[in-house]
Length: 296
Image 1 (cartoon, rainbow, N blue to C red):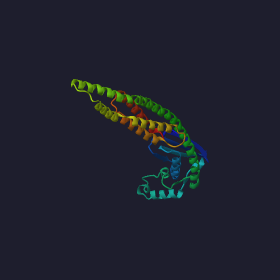
Image 2: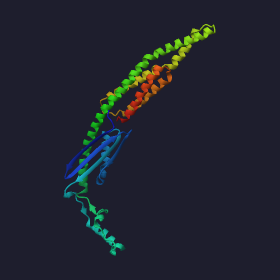
Image 3: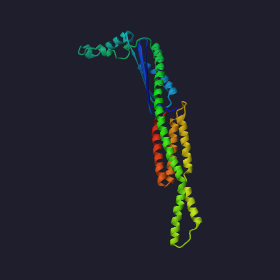
Image 4: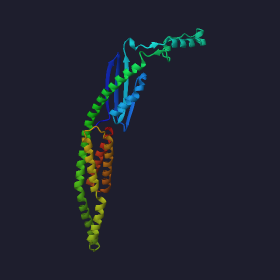
């Protein structure tokens, strides 16, 4: 199945007075790479989320952002009075504070380590967050996958159009190739007969046949045509596959092999008609190479 590597999905829920939100975005990447951003107190869930992402997505740069917002009085942190008093006592021993030159502002002290304690039991909060975020991750990834599949359908249609274009030009090359040897033989025979007539010497058929055989061997592109045709068949099979197996890397490799055959044909042929057709084939292959970079 053809899937794009770009997509977006999000999901939200509310439980126990807490609103949880998660979004997942993916972009092109040759490999799988995950960037996960969680609230600081839930950083321990990163490895679990990464493992779940790897089960669902094979390639792409995936960014997951998760947040939680608490409402109501249960969201209030508890002030650790002992820690706050210890900070104040230390500040009062400073000469500027003890002498009255500087006043102590309490609000900034609340941000010092240990002064505020998160509400509720930390372990139970983590368990609730784990359940919420893993459920949201499944929903967000499904929406992301749906978008990837929709874009993949459009990619498949375009990739097939390029293969049709290659087929059309390859058919022209296949029809033209047998004519090249006959035309070369006719030109060679005419040229040799003209030169030998001027020298009043008879042409030797064996020499002409030998030259034609050398030309035919040097310019024969039948094997390249056959291999390119086989690559196209495999290419269409991958585009038509309905399983979940990622095919992006295989398509990229096939495009490289197709370009190799086209380049070999171009180097062997000096015929203008064949050369123009191969230029068009190479252009279509380059477009395939560019577009398969977005296929998972």
